[in-house]
Length: 454
Image (cartoon, rainbow, N blue to C red):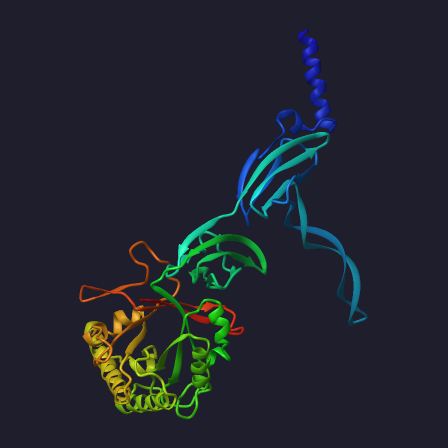
């Protein structure tokens, strides 16, 4: 009996060596890398058949899961007819010859299958090899996020962001998303799907459920750079207000007239009002040269803006913002002074320019003057009571803070970006959340989006 057993083992070994019996089928049990799996809509899982040399075939029982063969790029050598230069009787001539060259080729990975979640539901993915079959049960979930208007959320981590990702919304009237960063901006109650695409192919998605907030309004800020704006379309997409650029500096630019007034100022004001939207206005404070502003520059800009607003019959309590962001016009430099000393001097200089500009507006009866600046600008260059201590409408001074801070995701206890001044927490009245949103009504250009907290 012992001799017979040894003969059987020897015969089995010979059969495996010559290929009649696959080694894997003898040494290992045939199995799948998973017998049950949970995936999300827009994502997937690579299912592998292990323990057999036979070729497997996979099939899904439901449209909730799409099965496809896994392919990878390999470098392979192939015979190819190529053109080379050869020397014939002292002269170089082109000649076609057969050569072995290395090329990249897409090849199917044996017994590997990609299971893509297409919709919420379940499916049995059966993998057959020969006359046998193994089943993996797949459950597909639709990921969801519940949020409220006035809060932002960074979807990049939830949707597996890559450098070439682009984000899109299924319903602009419910929520917008920054095309590049994946920052979600809810704008009205309802539901929508946010997609992450690579090369226009959906790679992942999430359902967004939004609740409205009665104390938050959603708005855009626009200028000639946005082209012809359709405010009625914006209104239909639940945009409540528009802050419109009045002009830029003291010179004529491609988007301003000879008085530095935005070329679309009148059109934008009339369009926003006709659509039933609330309006605000802003002026980009700049110099007449490439250097620092002068008091004459500030006075001229204030006069021009006030005169134009008066001619357009703008209501006197309309919010007007002084846009502070032009480095060359507003920031001094002095290597001999400490950072603290220089910041104090810069704040005093900008205060002087803004007070001159503001005075010209107040002479014409405009009495609701605010400041627009980035978080870093507020923290580094506006360290002065004039900018930080808000006053009531009608009083001399600043009535409102409009803060630009992009790609900020709201946190518990910090719905908006904030900063400190002399130990006091400053929270903006208006928060500009980003500049790379797309919404119908602004053509093909990106638009800046804002929350107004009442």
